[in-house]
Length: 117
Image (cartoon, rainbow, N blue to C red):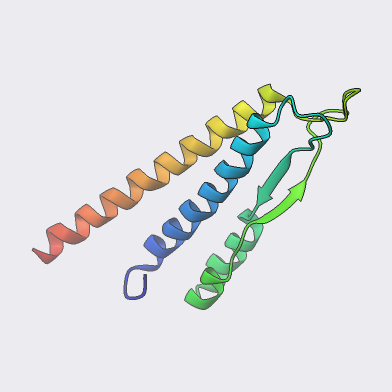
């Protein structure tokens, strides 16, 4: 997305990372009853913040989500440690932030279109 305003690049990258997180959360929910399954979490906010503060496109493109195994709850007898309630709350929060970012990006594009033509 070279040649566009930096805030749009940040939003675009953040949305891509949120999609990665969404996939991990969806996988956790799908495996909530799978014996031995441990939930995955995707983190990226700190690295994205560092890239934004440096204001360099190259650093922004290098930000990737770090996937880690994290227990929501103490493992049950079958070894599964997914809390479906916690995962649903995280999915909802992630979707809301993604939607807000998409709306902001849409409005930014609309403003640019008005200015251009």
